[in-house]
Amino acid sequence: MNKQVVVKKQQRQFMLFLFITFTIIYGIFGFLIFIRIQSSLLALPDQELLAYQDRLEFRDMPLPPENDENRPPILAEPGSPRIVMIKWNDRGTIINEAQIGTSFYQDFLADYQLSTDSIDEIKSIVLENDRRFRSLLIATDTEEMTYIELLINVDQEYALLATFEQLLVITSIIFIILSLTASYWLARKMIKPIMSSWEKQTEFVENASHELRTPLTVIQNKLELLLTTPQKKIVDVFENIAVSLSETNRLTKLTNDLLTLARADANVTQLEKNRFNLDAFIETIYQPYADIARTQDKQLELQLNSQQVITADQARLHQLMVILIDNALKYTEEGDTITLTTETMTESVYIHVKDTGIGIKEENRAQLFDRFYREDTARIRESGGVGLGLSIAHWIVTSHGGKIKALANQPTGTIFSIKLPIQ
Image 1 (cartoon, one colour):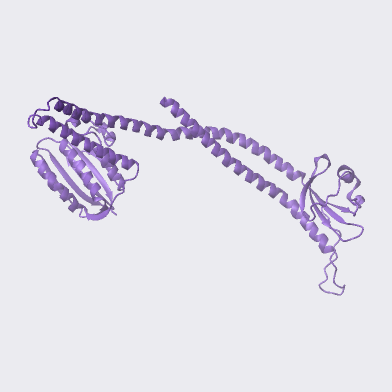
Image 2: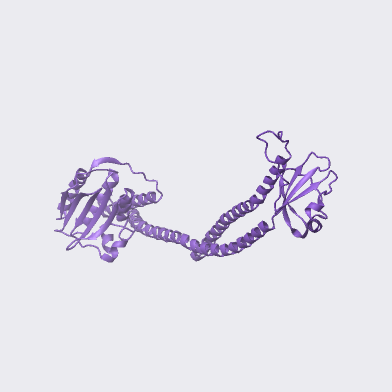
C-alpha cells in the first residue's frame, strides 16, 4: 500500500478519535452545567414555597394560653407577591376564587383540575398560555377545605434557562468547529513522530539488510568455491577459509549490535548497577589497549583526576569505553596520541576520550550517533565498521542518565566527552 495513503488513513483515524473524544467531554460538561443551572434557578422558588408552607402549618398549631409569656404572636394570613394559594374542597372545586382574583382565575385556572398524585412534593406544571408554575399541594384536616395548593410563577426562570440553552447551542457549534480544527492539527502533530519512526525503521531495515548481505555473499562465494575443489587440502584453500571466518566474525558482531539496539528500543535491557571507583575501572580497560596502540606506533595515555565512586553498570560502561577507544584507534595514524581523562565537577563525573587523528567535520557531528551513519563510507568499510558503535555508546550513556557529545580537538582530532551523574 502506498505510504501516503496509509499516512492519510491513519491521520483521519486520529482526527476522528480526537473529535469524538472532545465532543463527548464537552457534551458531558455542558449537560452537567445545564442541570446545575436549572436546579439553581428553581431552588429559590422552591424555597419560597416551603417557607410559605411552614408559615401555614405554624399558624394552624394550637397556641398556649393568653397569659403564657412564651405565647407567640398570632400570624395573619401569609402573603407573597409571587405565590398564589388555591383552596380545594373534597370535590376538587376551588373555593377561594374571590381571593385569587377573577382575572387570574379565568386566565389560568378555569380548566385546571386537581391532581393528588404528589402531596407535599414540589412539581412543575404548565397552565393556560404556556405559563409555567411550581406547585406544592398540602392536605388539610378541615371539613370545608381538603387541600391547599401553592403556586409560584417561574416564567422568568425558564426564560433565563431558554437563553442559556440558546447560548449552549451557539457555543456547541463554535466548539464543533474548533474541535475539528484542533483535531486536524493534533492529528498532524501525532502522525509526525509515527512517520519519523517509520522512516527510521525503514532506513534501519534497509541498512541492516545491506550490511548483512555483504558478509553473507562473501561467505557464500567462498564456500561455493571450496565445493568446486573438494580434493584440495586445507592449506591450499586457507585464504578462502580465513576470509569466510573473518566475514563470519563481522556478521556475528553486526548481529550482536543489532540485537543490542533492538533490545534498547524495546526497553527490555536492564542495567545491573553497582558501586565502583571510576579511575580504577578506566585503568583496567587501559592496559590491553595500551599494548594494541604500541603495536600500531600510537600512544595511549591516562590522566585520571576523579577518584570518584559511582553507581553504574560496569559491563555496559566497559562496552562504551571499548567502542570509543576502538573508534579512536581506527581514525588515528602512526605517531598520534589517544588520551583517556577523568574529572569530577559538582555532582557529575566526566570521561574524555581525546585523539589527534583526522577529526570529524563540524556539519557531521549532529548525525554522528545515528544508526548506520558513516562520515567516510569507504574508510569505515576498510576498518570493518558499520556505523552502529556510536549509536550503542549513545544509548549506554543516556540509559545511565548522562550525556555524550563529540567536540573538535585542537589542533586536530576529536574529543568524545561523557557526563555521568554521581549516584
